Structure formats: C-alpha cells, structure tokens
Image (cartoon, rainbow, N blue to C red; front, side, top):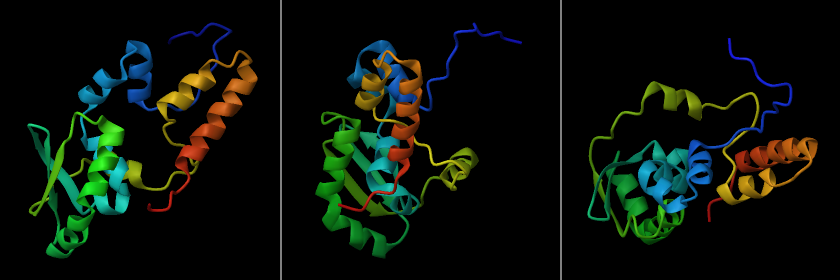
Length: 161
C-alpha cells in the first residue's frame, strides 16, 4: 500500500494531455502525440462522433467514414467549419484537409462507450490554460474549489456554433 504524505491534496480531474503538456512544457508535441482522434470527437460532439469516425490520417488529410449517405450529405457542407474546429483542438499544422466518405465505422472500445454514458457527477477535463492558471493559486482550499468548478463548467453542454 502506498502512503501519501500528510500534506497530500488531490488536485481534481484533468485530461492526460493537459498533464503531459504541463509536464513536458510543449503543448504542440503533446497534441501531435495524442493524435487527432480525440480532437475529432471533441470538435463534432458525441452525437456526430457516433456516426462519423476518423479512419486514417495521411499527409495532413484526415479521412473520416460516415455511417450513412444522409450523414455525408449533412456533414459535407460543414467540412470547413469542422476542419477549423479540429485544427483549433489538435493544432493548425496537423490537419490541413478533411475527406468524408460513406464506409464502415471503426468500432469504439467498450471503455469509451462506458465513458460516454452520463456520470453521477458532472466532471470533465479542464482546458490546459485554465488548469495551469488555477494550479498557480497559492491557497490550497481555493485551488481545489476552483478546480472542481472548472471541471463542472467544462462538463456543461455547449450549443452548436
């Protein structure tokens, strides 16, 4: 059993990418290492991500299969907006084009399906800049409250832009 020092204080929920970026000090490196798949899911939201999934990435082109021709018809005019969202999340130089086609969707592992179900507590990964700013707060009690609030804020549903 691991013993923690009596000064141990949990700091809240944070995405592994946030922690890696903070530890390495290079957000671009971490974004490239994590890939664009999480960025795609975050950019399009869970409803679209269940029906349109990345299948390959070659020379800056993200290939996405969609479940049905109707989804292709809906997403095709939104390609530029989706591209900008993915670029914002994954890094502008990583993805330069998105190509959509009707095809078989890769299976999502069971762990990911479980994660998408609503949780008892609304918690979500905190954006990197916000987590870094909050961790700089010297008062530990205030810091833990800010981390909890930021995590709940990040979990709030967003309206489609």
